[in-house]
Length: 329
Ligand SMILES: Nc1ncnc2c1ncn2[C@@H]1O[C@H](COP(=O)(O)OP(=O)(O)OP(=O)(O)O)[C@@H](O)[C@H]1O
Image (cartoon, rainbow, N blue to C red):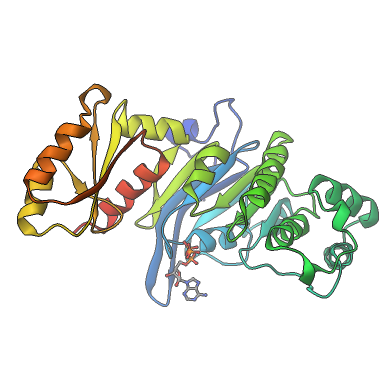
């Protein structure tokens, strides 16, 4: 058991946010395996009031498992989870601070939006449920759909009801597992506005996503789950700047995969494989990018170039680099 008194100084500093506040959720040295297959090997995570933290990582790295552990649905093999300073195993009542919106939509599809909220509020013993449901439907943009059967709602509205259910206990911590998967841009923007509003009102929000564009725009901080721990962590723009500085991303898209000598030529030119066999990337100082010259050199090596794209690197550049490093031999 770690507490403030036994923490070393750097740990104690890390435990506070920029304003000196303690984390609302603290995961320390999480260790977990399913059927002998390791998922976490000493994962640490702090989540603060008023932030949206994006949990990133490829399929199967443990994002859902971490959320389930924080919400008390999975018991870790080792480590500890503190909510507002208390270990959830010693004080399970602390879990009442948590609202969890799972990835799968878990609603009564043949009931209306309002009836769904009434059923879930009743099951959770929410006091003065009628008033709260009205307020929540207003806040989540569901008021006009209150009497609509959930099965007839679009995916975006079903996701909003899913989130609304997680808000019924007025949680101080909201965990959202891929809240915008499979929905259109308008619905995604609506959910972004809702989350940002909840954050401004003081909620601590942990959201897992594969949508890096979403993470870059929505999240105050992101963490990349790598090798059973949080690898890269920080503010999206700071992480990108730290990794790439002022350099630009140059992607050469080929008409066909490069053969061995062509690969050697690309690598000698500073390129590395990108998202597919026909895409190669390198990072150049802004004043050194000369697309015409590059096109000439690549053609000279016998490469048939479909397109050369130049853009500012973003979180997806960083993520790709991080996951490539993880899978490298
Ligand atoms: N109940 C379970 N029993 C056995 N293995 C499990 C169970 N739940 C998860 N796993 C395994 O644990 C690992 C982590 O799964 P998890 O769903 O947490 O990953 P994830 O990062 O959320 O993935 P995704 O991005 O695909 O949602 C995977 O290898 C998964 O197969």
